[in-house]
Image (cartoon, rainbow, N blue to C red; front, side, top):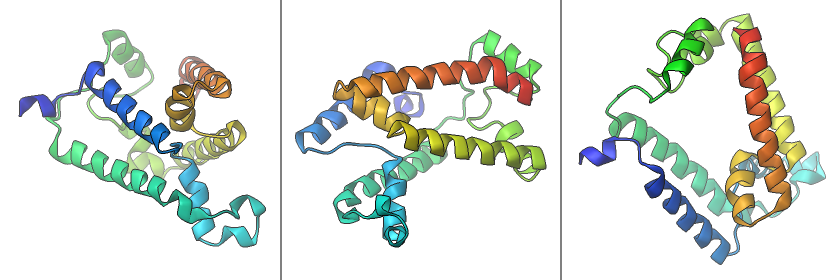
Length: 185
């Protein structure tokens, strides 16, 4: 039982993701989390205002079930299948985060300095989260999908646009980590 409380190694989680992706390809489905936002907007009646949301959302019900499963799985994993051990970060990463003012780096998945209620309810914290959300939403729409859609589904289908998008995601992440994050904190 102890093995389930520890992070799963790549040779367990990687093949499980591959099995899911092969199953989706076999059934002619494509997976992506951000496409569910379009589905939810369509369900809410956004098709009255934009043609982008006019489609048969019922064909995407299975993808909504995936989102529900991800939410439930995350809740179960954090609350019932975790031994609350610290996240395995390198010493250098912990030192770098401490220099930026992140206390207890690696102690939780969501640092209080970004996701704590005191931060969220501050002008700076709320501004960062709102601007970041808008940029992620714009990037997802502009790139034709999010990280899960391109990195998992797109690369599984050997799509060149997804490879380019994933390279862009990593470049953006590195630029954010090394140049913008130190300016913000």
